[in-house]
Image (cartoon, rainbow, N blue to C red; front, side, top):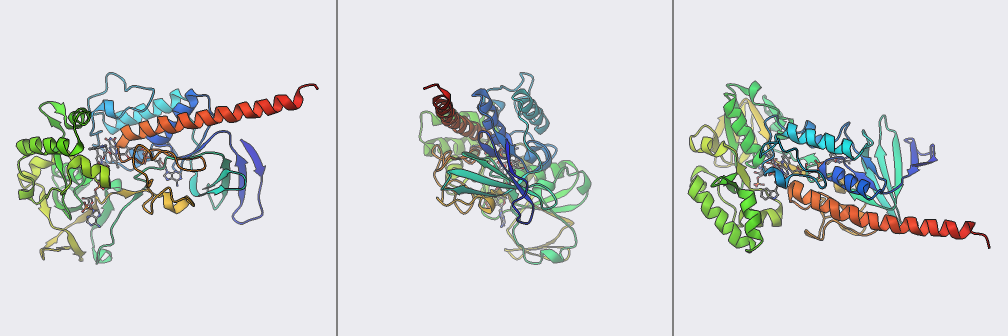
Length: 415
Ligand SMILES: Cc1cc2nc3c(=O)[nH]c(=O)nc-3n(C[C@H](O)[C@H](O)[C@H](O)COP(=O)(O)OP(=O)(O)OC[C@H]3O[C@@H](n4cnc5c(N)ncnc54)[C@H](O)[C@@H]3O)c2cc1C
Ligand SMILES: NC(=O)C1=CN([C@@H]2O[C@H](COP(=O)(O)OP(=O)(O)OC[C@H]3O[C@@H](n4cnc5c(N)ncnc54)[C@H](OP(=O)(O)O)[C@@H]3O)[C@@H](O)[C@H]2O)C=CC1
Ligand SMILES: O=C(O)C(=O)Cc1c[nH]c2ccccc12
């Protein structure tokens, strides 16, 4: 890394350095997988990570009971298998252990505490200028030919504006702040949202003696995590090799109905598009049930309508019902933060901060821009993107090195 200027005179203080190899934004699974693959090709890199450790989402923004909900073979990063003693569905602690040893194995040392606030492409030099806020208003500009966006589809929380929220006297939190149901024992808790987070928190609340209510707006596909002893996801992947997605969805829904019964009867309408098709088209994940469904059937988890407003001690719903609650937890999902920092002149990303083109053509943008972990296919998709992006960068890096060495040899060779 080459230091360019101590301070350009602008306020706040900003230093600038040209880095060797690409700049990677984010040290989650995607950023680590890109770095590992670059390491294999002997390409240097710089990772900028806002938090003070790797895998911030998994370390700090997930609940205690979380397990991978896809079988382990679908969650491994490129080049390193999970240890053989890992369970079929590793816990978040298992997964974190793996990620730390992955980073150590490839000697990946991100620069922590660097919040990327701006990235712009300079047409005149064909270089990316990436600004990262460090602390106390200080900032550093990193300059490179290549920029890898690996900041995640789940970078920021989504909390809807609900009328009367400021009047509600109980605790309000987002699922990313929820650790365990222990402290809600005996409390009436409204969980807004019925994705995997909403479902699993309701299950956890029940198991800790709380009284959960799950507010549903538009419904969701609930699938058993396993069908006849085999993972539903694994079956779907196998069938997709031979059959179109609509047929596979039809099969999954038929078996789900046989195993779970009708979900509509309990207030969970199924979307019009099938579970895999809707995941591909909108990114909405089906719920892979790990136990909440039977508690919905037994009435321990109560399904309620969309929230209309909050009051001092409870909520009003769009169907006119009103109920008292001690706490409200928004399990309303996440969003990308790319639009807040990437100046994307070419419109490669949408306003939602996801690549405009669909998988598999979504990992490479113009001008040395790459995008890893935005294919809506979880860790499996992140690993595939990482391999493609890092291999492409490595080829260009090698080319550049050869040109530079060639030019240097030409300069020093005797005439
Ligand atoms: C609760 C939960 C459970 C999940 N379970 C599964 C599962 O079982 N299987 C599966 O396949 N997928 C799962 N997912 C999907 C999840 O997106 C992936 O597992 C994985 O975390 C994606 O990795 P990533 O590196 O792309 O993003 P992240 O893990 O979100 O990592 C992005 C990193 O970028 C950093 N960052 C963001 N913005 C900036 C910035 N401006 N400057 C600097 N750094 C920044 C973040 O701090 C973070 O460390 C789950 C998601 C959630 C929320
Ligand atoms: N064990 C595991 O592996 C787990 C994996 N995950 C994954 O993490 C990702 C995020 O999941 P999750 O946190 O559940 O988020 P999701 O985006 O999947 O679900 C959000 C939920 O909140 C609802 N919602 C959003 N906005 C509003 C609003 N304004 N008013 C009312 N309801 C609203 C949505 O309803 P609507 O459909 O109407 O918009 C939906 O039910 C997913 O990929 C998921 O699969 C999460 C937890 C556990
Ligand atoms: O946890 C998620 O939502 C994931 O992104 C993993 C995932 C990728 N493809 C899927 C299809 C069905 C269910 C989960 C996933």
